[in-house]
Image 1 (cartoon, rainbow, N blue to C red):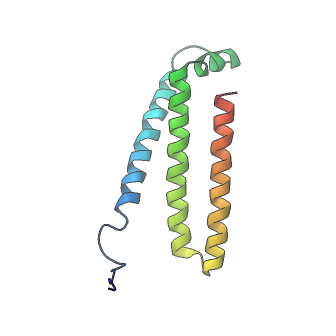
Image 2: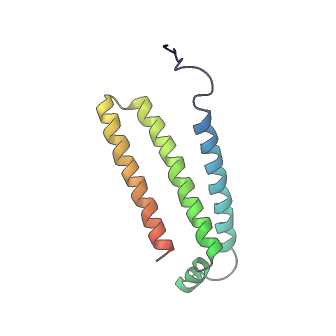
Image 3: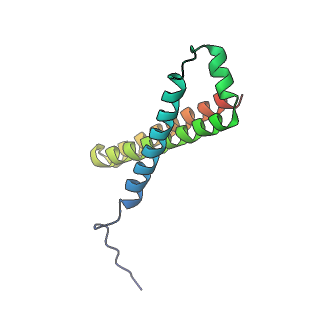
Length: 115
């Protein structure tokens, strides 16, 4: 039995649309938290930053921000490449390069937060 699947139509991009909005919201909340910390009145020094990031909640919040940023960027890059990168082999190569770069940045963030 052959099933014909319609590849155009409503709801095919809904997941990416929702993911971009959720990740943007997470990044906005984190940005407000960081703004409050920076504007908190204490002069910023290495010791202040070190003390802030020794707290578990700040590490988790920063990791959540980094994951959201990576996911948000991946969706955006993927959509741009799908629309503009031709031929398919170039698109695939660029997908691989960008995926590796984003993964490397995320890994570097984790290393910085938990070393």
